[in-house]
Length: 373
Image (cartoon, rainbow, N blue to C red; front, side, top):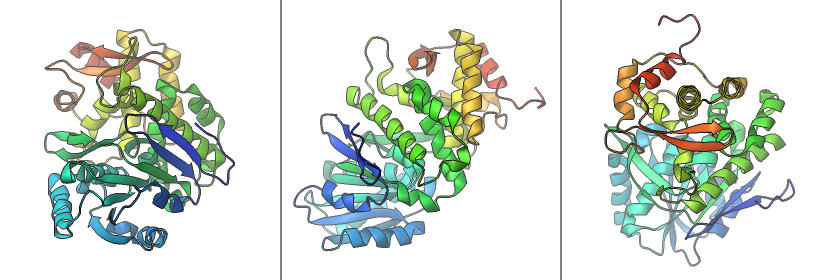
């Protein structure tokens, strides 16, 4: 990670087979043009209607390049094959070729959907991501995973398609609702537990109300979380496995197996980062039962996540419903469930085939104090 003065963007290199840069800073929307492939003829901007004002700002930065706009629904409503198909039809109508590029402008759902559209059109055209939420900046925009949801679960249809670059303009977070900013911190804190304890130290030492778009601490948290993801995907882009017992890219799914099941049960009415926070506490409780994770580290999960305003309890769904959803998780192998858990802070491993008793007991531990058992 190359740290630069506050007025300049930080540049993080994602050193995969097709390397690209993630630029992080305030007022860096102008960097989008620099990340587009040389000689690009046209651009299709994929963005939800709710971001029309930001679309105008992006259009100014792309002045002189022939640009079309493909507007999609907000949030998870965009992540289905029907919306993707409508985008492909529009690209076909415009005669979009491999000399053209896609730019996504939006949150994680927009990034996932837009990346998938780019991955499949002509078997792959260039895409630059401009994430507009904290969650998208530290998660969906980096790493090349793209996809849509199906009735069976979240992100079960997709492709690996690395972007040509990512622009994380922290100024775009100024109008983000507070609850959305807090939700994004779920993915940030996850990175602290799996790889970079300094993230936890920063969260624990900072008044969460001061974590705003212009906060130097928030910028460092974003930089550190992106660096964690860059390091992981550089070593295991397609989730084929890590080395020396490390889970490889699977580590980024810490807390996600239960999180995705909760999202499906809630019909995606819960924010992703909120579900991840619950899922992180769950796997900490599971590791305490199966691998002896210390009570202190389990408590640290609850404390760090709760400090920023994220949920750490959950009892809305019957366990059997969630268990059924977890069995179709992407990390499962046959009928065997797999979870990323911790042996200790920043020491992740894969737990394969835990007993149903342990799974159920860990879920029971999520119940709010005083709730019926």
